[in-house]
Length: 457
Ligand code: 4AD
Ligand code: MG
Image 1: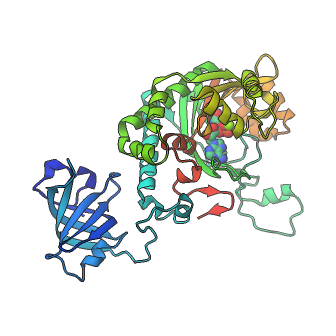
Image 2: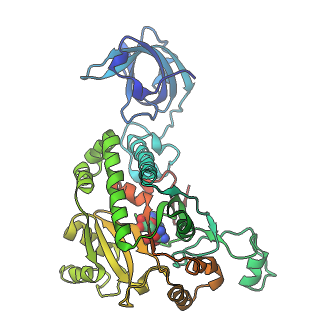
Image 3: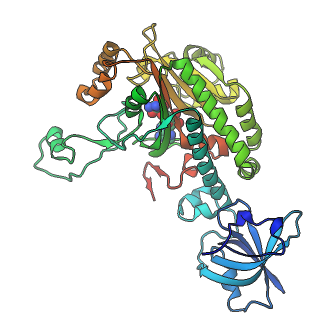
């Protein structure tokens, strides 16, 4: 269909005849003229279409003004009432798709909860149009960052036989149904598609390490899955992760890389998503743009886990989870550290070994690992990061001590046998980052089709 995107309609086209397409967002009918605000997804702002009622039949006009209707409009571009604005005076209109009067997005403002019940239509609101435009721009910025810095984009498998994080949150993949004759789990697994147990990946890291110990610098960018039995505004069962893995890099190197990446992608959004960020600043988080400018321009904080525990103890706050060394920081602790104490992104470094994953490099103290989480105000953890244990014996002992199945990690261990090198990586949760840059307070509002506990639409 010959037409131009609405974002291209500007005052250079005044006097020209154009054809545009889009969906009716709002409409207004008065005595001699009618107006439609048309949107085709190419820009946050709508374009006003003006109908001279003498030209359009009383029978056809209501169809054009129906909220949600899809139109193709040919008309002349004219200057609008507002400064620098333009509108289109309709000459001919095709109703591409009529919209039923039951269209759920009527003129009032809907709650986010209600909009989640209509995931197929919520993207036609200004808020979600903006969220998903920023999601696209952010994804692009991430790819651009890694490509500009010499990383290879690799594809880790979705179906795996290991549990990278060891948290027991793997969704099972199976083709075998209920069979009362099966006596044991082992027998059940043998009958299954792969002849062994399989699940959806919780992280592409283990395969990422394989690729990094040959290609040097890699990143993955794909969906990951966790059957976390928690119903929080920050957890999704399906979320997208960006996981760079870097050979010949220690914990300080990878913290530098994570910082540089976050700053770079934030700057990209400030430069390329101005209208959307202004919208979020006005509607969802006052001061959002200033906050992001600050992220792009100033240093992040860094604190040792042990010192963070002292800060929390001295805070005078009553936490639900009592603060003791060895504690896995909960949302309430993370929020105190970022929102109230540091008031900016902070890397918490050197966590207790017991609360972290098996693959993390053990520090000489024997108690802590070279791991860090990046916490940000308002959201909490957005990045989980570590240097990897590259000593064969230490890694083997850790796998055994945790009761993990050795055969699932044989290849991974081999990497420590054939040219083992110091290497490090991190995982950035795309939706968590989106929460931070849009001010959305619920992760469900940053992903097109949220999958969470008891929720699959
Ligand atoms: O801290 P996590 O569990 O780290 C890993 O998976 C490592 N293998 C990463 C690596 O070193 N390559 O998860 C990384 C990030 C978290 O910081 C968070 O942003 C996000 O993934 N994340 C979730 N996002 C949404 N819903 C969930 N259930 C999430 N779990 C983790
Ligand atoms: Mg983590």
